Image 1 (cartoon, rainbow, N blue to C red):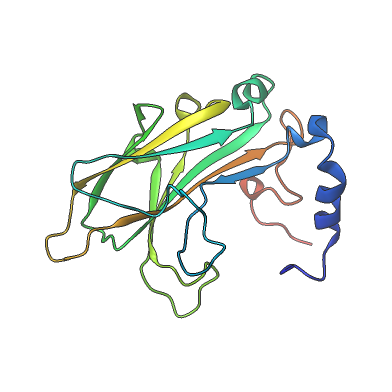
Image 2: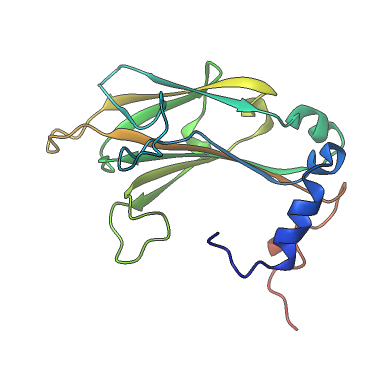
Length: 193
């Protein structure tokens, strides 16, 4: 295991795993497995990575177990983040993103250029990250969800076409209605000890 020595928050998660009533409002991190092809443990029939062709949508299916709508009714949802990592993409490439047939507006997106880094915590795989802080009308539903990404325009100076490498969904909850997110809530400003 890579997290040794384990800290108290790790053991807390292990104790809570067999209790769905407790786990239902805990932060979740979903991802679509990516086949690396570099070893025998590579995922069979993997949806990712997938190579783009211009104007040809890539559709990726992901099952979500959280009932986000129900938790929203009691004001417990803090944030829903959707991330796509696209390798061999440049800042001139243009994409369209959809979730369950609904186009996600680009004003909800933050693009992070991770084309190269001397140090990397993510397996030295580089690319552009497209991160959406989803508003409730674009949240995924409980059960099967279809994520769709279409390459609209490819940088003509780059011979290789981009690949969709990672699809991740992170759901963050509040401990209670109108509760702070962490010990130091960033919305309250800096903390002086």
